[in-house]
Image (cartoon, rainbow, N blue to C red; front, side):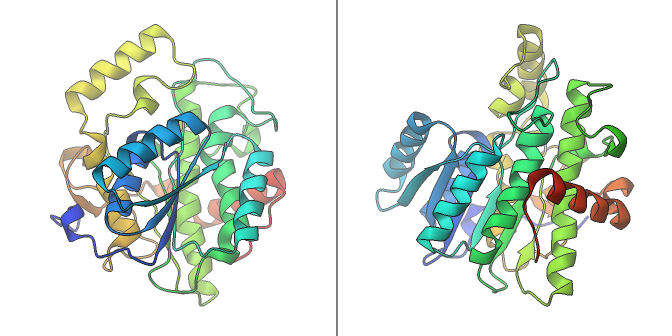
Length: 309
């Protein structure tokens, strides 16, 4: 593992750059938006809840009065919402220098489907972001400073892509679904960078994970029961780090010159639970290029979005 002591104090100026951060109203997304805005980037908070977005922007402006912020509604669980978001961005024509794919859910105790018929965690955490990337790729400038950063998880390690039952209709489990969605995010980031390299594009795709960060995704989730909420709170209170620390790998990948395309970054502490950004371990199944190519094709078919690099 390559170690650094990188913090937000090492961030270069982000003046003149535009960042889109999904799930930016709380947790990792909020902390990333706060830091990027403080460094001078124009930040679009992409989230479901307009009221939460307004509160988040007010909080950021309290810290950084000159922050350039915008809100645009996005629900990654809805392909209609993703398409509307992409169409609005393309109509604006504003370049997207940073696309931080952070929004996510966990702790869904019983199987649910999105309106598009996808298992809810797979649809929200992965397929929505896959479609969004395909729609916004034409807006990403062909520069080495342009970054697409999917947020994966330590949970990818025991995960599997269940190609014979992607929507887990036959055998659902909350953690099984979460692990699959986060493994898919990691495989997507690695495959995207391979395709960018093959096309000769300088854009860097850099997947990351936050370690054990204390955020709402595990403390509550959208459908977590009281036992799950309590267990998540207790576990992450003991082993977790603040969301601001968990956001460091995200910020390193989006801003650091030394962040390498196709690498995977997370915390450098014991078991990668906390610490400063460093190269993270990638499970063998995430390195399976044939499976990644298959997942890409299946994702294009499911979403109807041609994610051509």
